Length: 403
Image 1: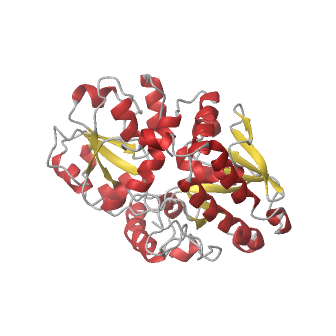
Image 2 (image 1 turned 120 degrees about the vertical axis):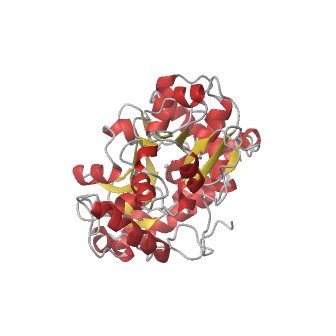
Image 3 (image 1 turned 30 degrees about the vertical axis):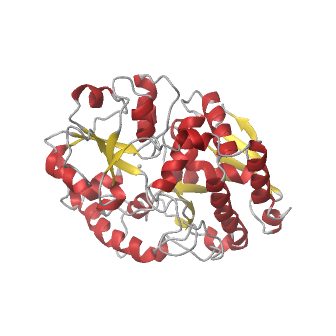
């Protein structure tokens, strides 16, 4: 599950929802919100962005229809519309049809109707994979690699494209209170019992405790997303999302409004692909022709969105507000800037956007599977191989972000 950012005044209830979605550097960052935030909002005029978006979506007038793609093509996301989902909305562009009551954003893309579905509260906080298995209209879903591993037998999925190179999932703390804490391991060394506040059930918690990086007694799973205890106590460690809390705590949280220090769970070894675009295993063969066309379009959408995000970010802010969610263009701009500044979005070890490193994931499987098996997690599969949950065959190697 995930998180999201807010508007200028943040209530406890609103912040609780921001963080409820967050489940998601070798050194920590005393993380001020990006100085590029204000500039990012003004990066370019909307018409230019729209033109880029239309080029992305238009790739071929009927390419997806001709490839036999489902129509409508329903993609289940993991939260309210937000910058983290920017590439998906980029496929349609800023002028799609919004249905805030249903949490559906639709538009014509290459001969079919693309339907992007909101997650989180919009689907009763079900995971996107669960929703895909419960609702036959859902063709693809955002699935974190950690969840793909621990649900390999109960809700099997295959990721075919990853918009994130690194997960934005992080732990935050007050850099003045803990000037020597730099990493997730340092958090474990510094925290007392119950001082690490997280949501219950997150895969990365199982990993960090199972690896001995943290002790179970240090973890408080009663966190509900409210910033009040973090602000009032001042000595807590708390989960967050680099694309949300860094901006929110510096600019929006009453009683704080200063930088926080952060460290990514990715850098502690939990090297998942966050919100990877995933389908059911049978789609790999049944929908191969469709995936061969769609995945390069998704790659191109990431490139276009990161190059010129303003029009989509502005639309997402308005759409989120229409869904009674707290969102702003400034927060979305800061999120996009953070994606690049912290290396969350990028080409990775190859000069290709969206491909996934099976060696990295096999290492994670080999470490994480025994932890979950020892905890009697139902969906664990003995001998799970990376190729069962990741498939790069549809990636176009010529498409690159250049960073």
